[in-house]
Image 1 (cartoon, rainbow, N blue to C red):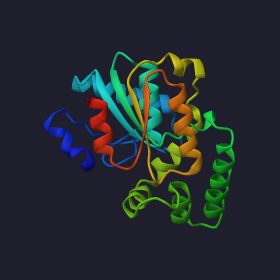
Image 2: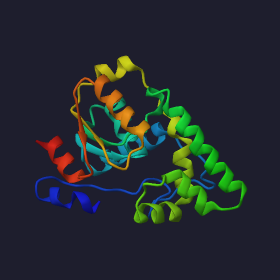
Image 3: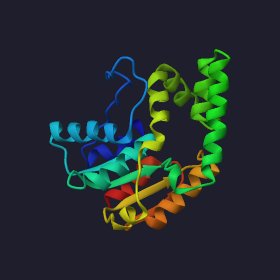
Image 4: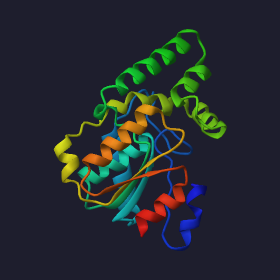
Length: 208
């Protein structure tokens, strides 16, 4: 990730393509995934590279993976930066936003427009680059979307987590995601809520 290049002088920075993205393979047909499945992929990669304990950075669905690793594989993780984590189960009002989004996706698919469905999935605030990447890896995007609700966490479990976690709420986040970031920060045992879109600065704060 180019945004983290400034950190390479002081830390080993590892970026990987999750299953279905970039050069990483995925099962055929690739219709669904879960957060835990993706977490096990990441845990296996950390083990293979001898890169643990690691500080994780996850954006969107990746933030759920990083959080799951903190909760279930804390021996592999020393901290995490969660960017706009879509943990919708924490915020009841957000389910309405998710239902509206699902309706827009389904309407676009029924109309035969996969590109419009992807646009509805990534949201109106998505950058041109993000939209292009999502369209290129549409199967993986839809699999991720289907797995959003697969991470089940208890509030007590979050309170018990003492790993240092930074939560970054970006200007592109929806109102629901901003509320979720605040709720998650209030529950985690050792977290700091940040605002902005400078991933490198937020990651630097985690390293300090």
